[in-house]
Image (cartoon, rainbow, N blue to C red):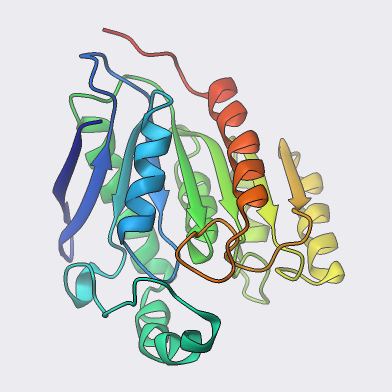
Length: 251
């Protein structure tokens, strides 16, 4: 499976990134994969390779590039629950600095770069995200409804907030099909109801699903939150979504 380390030009500098794609000489649908809060690392590279094996060009940018190349902070090989507080103490300033303005500026650059790659076919793309990346996937799709045909978010964070531009309020701008796979405690019943009502009112083609017996971060095998069954459920939801919405490879 070919992989590349890349540099994506943005208005604020060069974003380091990782890409994986099939080695078959064909052009494939593009997928923009947004990282979780822990950042670009081997775990996400493995997910990109897995997804690429199903026939997609997968681009994974380092969202923290303004603070340096990945890894921006040193991470242990396995992120145990007792280490999370100290890690998040280092990460939160980076997360908080990633404003909506920066998210949208970066999304423009990422999509421009993705669709210009010679291995990427003509046609719509998908945005997928984990943890905080789920909200970014939604924002990107809402800002680029003519390009993004599928959105998937897993154990999402910051989807429902009090902000006027909270991701759950962007449904009227979405044309993509959406799947959101939630851990048991990701959203309160009230917040999940608010999310569903907002998407229903906007006429979005979507599913929200609480994955059984999960905690936040369930797809990440380098954390204590990992659930093998939930990771498989995530693939079982994601792959058919992409198959329905993205163009087949062309030579």
